Length: 344
Ligand SMILES: *[C@@H]1O[C@H](CO)[C@@H](O)[C@H](O)[C@H]1NC(C)=O
Ligand SMILES: *[C@@H]1O[C@H](CO)[C@@H](O)[C@H](O)[C@H]1NC(C)=O
Ligand SMILES: *[C@@H]1O[C@H](CO)[C@@H](O)[C@H](O)[C@H]1NC(C)=O
Image: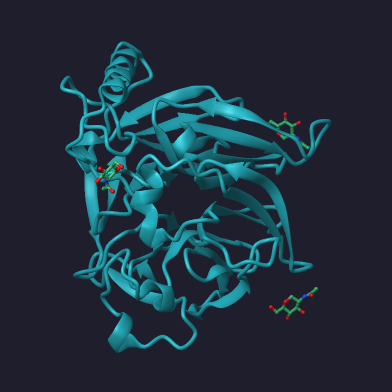
């Protein structure tokens, strides 16, 4: 999600950030990553907000600013078009458009994405088209859900995860009051609690509202056995847990409070979660070595096991997602034109 560094100083935020960096620096969980490689998008495209790998580890796949889903096809061919959001996409109009353009309303803006490994289908939370899916061989996306539970078009969708066992899709509406083109307004002091968490069942086509009143619902991740689903509230510096099974089913609690703004959450193969954490919008990095943005590895109980500062890789930009795959870390940003691959 968006994070622009503003010149306006927020002393309180800076002091908090300094305290966080002192705490993390004195802790043994901090491990510096090393940049191994950068996967660049084709010229003029930006914003690999989220990455997905297919069932044989192919990819990564990512949604970009001009409404396409690209697949990384190795160092020789780089990123190739795999799918597109808009059913009657006009290439002349859409190809190469940048983020937050009005044209994204027509061309689409894919955000969170995740495969159903049993069917090979790719599910996508699109900021303008709602919940869509793409067949295993790519092509045109099919719109599945365009409106919220009140029958109104979504403000904008952001995060998505597919339960690996059941194929049930969890997705977030960051805000029902704002569009993604107004994201900087949304993140600049606005008190918006219109974010929601939804569940979509592909066997019935039914969509269920799980949580509302969220302070910018950014990322989502379901636990490995489907007992709970996590949702990050970007503006509230916390992650909520919604119980799906057991005695607390259909209630929620706070899973983790964070030293910054949490964006996407990604499960790894050990059933832990990686969370991308950022500076609050508008606060400059503190003068001593900054630790935000960073990736945090958290276990199913909500304990932080590893903190990976990403300031060298992203400088003053925010990191949208940190994800582990095949022993490496992938870190992306809505504002960059590449995905970083790092040592774990
Ligand atoms: C953020 O809000 C402040 C105060 O309302 C305003 O002065 C500033 O220009 C805004 N910045 C952006 C990037 O919208
Ligand atoms: C779900 O929607 C698809 C079209 O998107 C349709 O083919 C299918 O029959 C529907 N399934 C149910 C159970 O309604
Ligand atoms: C899911 O996994 C957690 C931790 O791994 C375990 O405590 C819980 O009992 C499991 N729940 C179900 C329904 O299998």
